[in-house]
Image 1: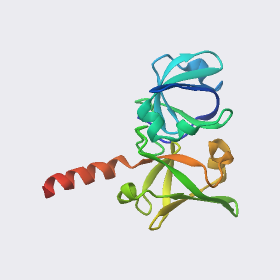
Image 2: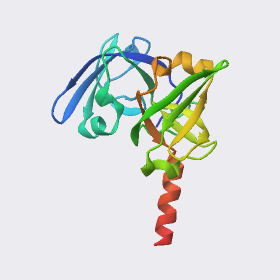
Image 3: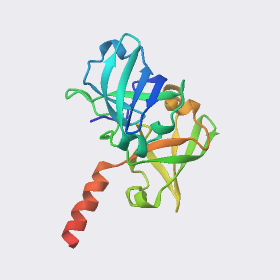
Image 4: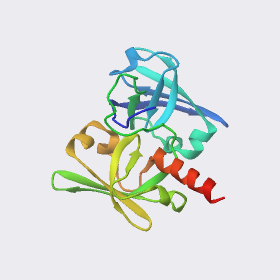
Length: 198
């Protein structure tokens, strides 16, 4: 379980893709010395298990499902990824409950400065539109954000300067794909209501 509060960014230094799996290596000196083999780390919102590490880098094995469902399949060397270690039981929950189970990757339609802030608009896949609500929570590349606008085929969030400064969004552009995880509570409500309706 995560909170969507990014600890640091890391740099992709290797991505070896084979037919059914891949090995991803991220340079993350800010957290690598404290990581243990087997630790769960959200990498752009994907819950991955650390399988190797040294003082500078952490490596992860990716399943075919991860490659198919997330933007990590098209990740470029030297690109930045958001990193968050799993929530400790005694820690404060400052964002929202994020599982690290990415629902889909979707395209950035616009990322524009508006005064001191930025407006980020993302395409909304029809299959997931029911989970998006005005003022609801969403994880974008693992960042806990609040939905500010909902349209027929897109939604938008607003970013304060701190979020731009400490996440990979400072390097993102229109046309890039980001990972989306929709609110867990909305999924359970949908499931419960569907069961009652049956």
